[in-house]
Image 1 (cartoon, rainbow, N blue to C red):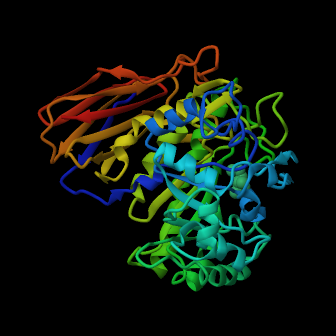
Image 2: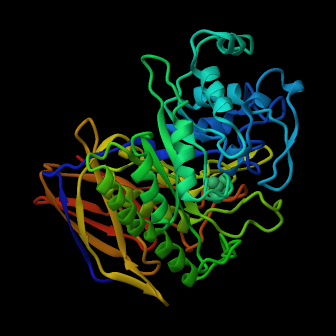
Image 3: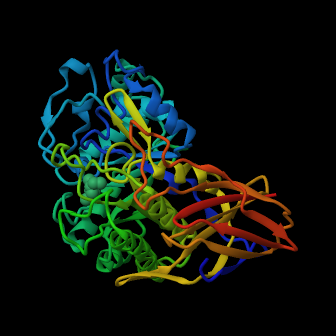
Length: 495
Ligand code: AHR
C-alpha cells in the first residue's frame, strides 16, 4: 500500500565517519538511573560484580556502548568528587536537590564509575562541576583520575587503583544557562575559558574539552561560545528533547496508551533536530570552517509524563515502538551532520527518560530503543554513504513528515548497511534504492515492529517488541527493493 519510495544510495561518494561516540549513553545520579538500575552494592539477592548488576552490564556490553557520560546532567554542577572516594561508610550522604529530594549515598563515585566502564568496555566522559565548584576542585579531580605520580595519584592508589585512568572527554559543566548556574551566554563563555585553562592532560594523553551548549534553538548561545571560546574547547554541546504536547512543562504526554495524534506529534518533534542541527552547525561553520570543534548532542531523547505511581522527579517512563522510531529518526539525521556531530548521548541509559533498559528489583527488560541501538551497531566508526530518499508524506492532524527515514554506512570490512524506517503507522511502503557503487547481490537483516503504535516490553512480556529476521528485501540489477511494514525499523546488510 501507499505511494512507493525511491532512493539513491551513493556509495561512490562516501561521506565522513559516523563516529562511534554518537552512541554514547548518559547515566546521571537521577532516580534509579544508577542506584538500583546499575549499582546494587552488596545486595546479594541481585547477581553483581563489584556492585554492578550482571544482567544490565551484560546487556550494555552486548550493545558496544562506546562511552558513558557521568555524573550528570544537573547533578554534575553540584557534585563534589571528594565525597565519592574512600571507604564507603565514610562517604557523606547528601540530598539530591535536583531529582526527587532523595538521599544520595555517594556509593558510586569515581572508582565505581571507572569499574563500570571497565565492565562494559566503555570510555569516560566526565562532566565537571562549574556551577558550585571551583577550577581548583575540577583540576584536582582530573589530576586524581589521570596523574601517574604525586599525592593525588598516591591517594588514588591507596583507594585501590594504582594505574591512572584515561579521560578522553571532559564536559565543562552542564546546562550553564539553567541548573548549571543560570548564566548568560556572555558570562558562561568567560567561565568556560577560565575552566578550560585548568584542564591539563598528562603528557602523551588527550582530554577533549566540551563546552556546555545551547538548549534547543538558542543559537545565540552557540554564536557566543564559538565567537569567544572556540580556541579553548574541542567540542560544544547541544541539548534537545522531544516533548510532545506543544511545550507544556512538565511534560504531560503519555509514554504508552497514546493515540495516533501523539504518535505523529512525537515523531515530528524528533525530526526538528534536523533544523536545529542545520542552524547550529551553520554558526559553527562560520567560525570554524575546518570543523575542528565538534558538536556534541550530549542529551537527546523523548521526555514524557513519568509512569503513574513512580517517585516524583525520577523521570521514569515506559518506552515503546514510537521511541524506537524516534531513535532511528535521530540516528539517521546525525548521518547528515556526521562531519560536525561526532558525539551524542541519549538521555538516559537505564530507568530514566528514553532508556535502553528498565529494571525493577531483580527484573530487567530491554526496551525498543535498546533494540534500535543494537541494530545500528554497524554504524559505529563506519563511513557514511549518502542516501537521497524521495518519499510520500505521512500526515496526521497538524503534523506532517516524510513517511520514510533512512541512512547508510559502509563498515571497515567493506559491507554496506542500510537503515530504513517507516513512520506511517498504517501503510506499508515499498522502497526501491538505486545502488551506485555497490556490487552487492543480496540483502538480509532485521525488522523491529509491533502490533500497536505503543507496543512495548514489560517484565511480564519482555519480548513483545524484538528484532525479527527480515526477508522482504531483494537486489536485482543494482536496485534494492524493500517492503517496509507500517511503523517499522529495518536494518539490512548488503552483500
Ligand atoms: O536528563 C535529565 C536532565 O535534563 C539533565 O540533568 C539536564 O541536563 C537536562 O535538563
